[in-house]
Length: 360
Image (cartoon, rainbow, N blue to C red; front, side, top):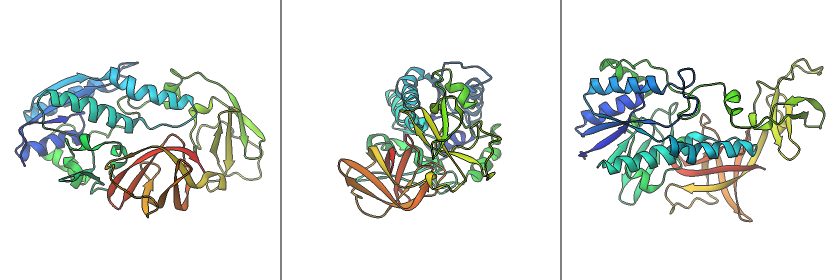
């Protein structure tokens, strides 16, 4: 099917550039939009938005497609960043990239593109979507090392209905080869990392601009005081670096890891050893569960879940108990982190997910 008007979210990177080319090659009418979503402390030192825009302009010149720019900074602050800060203040570890997709790329951007007459929007995400009579299905990408369905699990049927992911069947290496063959100057540009739209920076320093430091005790699992933390908001479960407790007179030289955060007592709890039992949980509770297809029923049936992006799917079952949804894994999981998302799968089919509320 050929669309009269598709708008690509062009970031200035290789993935979205090749996305635009593939759609153009397939015969669709393609426009591009560059989104700017961050204004605070936006300097060359921290944010690459100006360079990304320049790259996007060169890409559009090469492909001969029109480019618009739009600023969603207000929406990003209200719907993504405020939540990000609130979760950190509560001692949890949020994932803003997921909200960034649901609220900015596939809500604010989709609405804007629709007002411009677009039938579909496309992004450089590595995922696949199947548009069927009974609804749209989100699938893992062919390149499992780059699959981004984890970050897209919060999309609903109305959003997926208008979404295209042309890179879903491609390997990342093939995408770079394609960009090089097209003489796109960004064919070897480094993939973006860091907080969605905010860029790469020292995370703890960035967070201290918005969250007060509240020092407290670092203790082991027996309650022995081992040091002082700089605010439990700045640490996450499983963290090894930056604990500031080097040189302790211990029987073992094994590294220390964050295993829990006691918000009420303002204590950071650590344990020694990569496989310490306190790092593992076989069950967790889920809050705010979202189903891509609300008709899907998977309770008490074998499924898989990922509790972090780079994890391989783990065998589990979802059970409803006393008004709670409990995810029970076949094997204990390391560093279950409240505030992060558990994303649910059946094979390559992404079902949805929820926010990890408790380690059980």
